[in-house]
Length: 357
Image 1 (cartoon, rainbow, N blue to C red):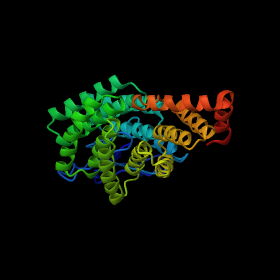
Image 2: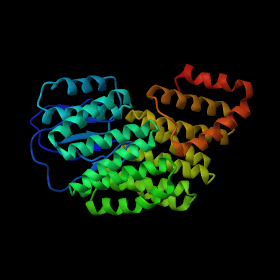
Image 3: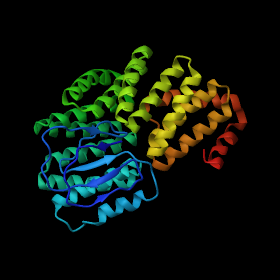
Image 4: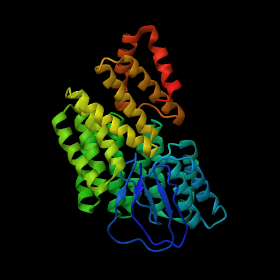
């Protein structure tokens, strides 16, 4: 999910939660640098760095994250809107990164209203884009697209090429995730070109993930593998953990489709470990669905049932749907596991909850 890597000098406190996928640096009043912008993202490719300054970097989820989030919010409920809005959107972002959408949405909506009231166009782009990401993970794809298109319009009107590229990258991600491969194929190459021209390496990573995943859904396994391997090299060069987790997941799917079951298993287990450490339950559920598919190939339907049940539990906890693009594959895995296990399917699934796997 989203890493805000544009740093600014700060006279305020830094709250490092050491826990959720992010540490949030509450930054203040200095003007933004004119160059060197880098978007980093989490589940939402390429989030723009807010102009009022904040850093969000990946970290592992811990129970202290909620404390840090409340501290961010409670420090300034009576502060001027120009200061309160960034605090609200950062608190909402932190909640989003922990998949706590019920808390994230009202915080970001309040921030958006304050940004609008103060005429902060860049803040509006950031907050509207974040609302688009929340809608996406709930499976509300049309609403998500509308929000990202609105953020794109505002960025274009402001002449902000970077934030415009960021929103286009979101729209490309949303396109393949919702099954709209034509749009993903149209947007993907243009976004990659823009990110390279802007020098945004993490933006390049998310563009490559979008292109590689779209190629995989089109059945171009060779092209997908080339794009995703290039992406993995760049992720490792930058030590970008979330990018590594995403890329291993997609490369693992490619390996499964190429008949490389054991290679795919290793990749998915590594991806699962990273997503779990990052606290990304939304993607962890998808990786577990893929592990279920691999379990069926390895003739272990009981393990498949356990992984499917674990994925169901994660999605129930965060009130998220199976991504549209992944639904057909998951349905096939469920059907195969039920056919293999018969009446014992539910019992096998129950063991997932009992074991916490």
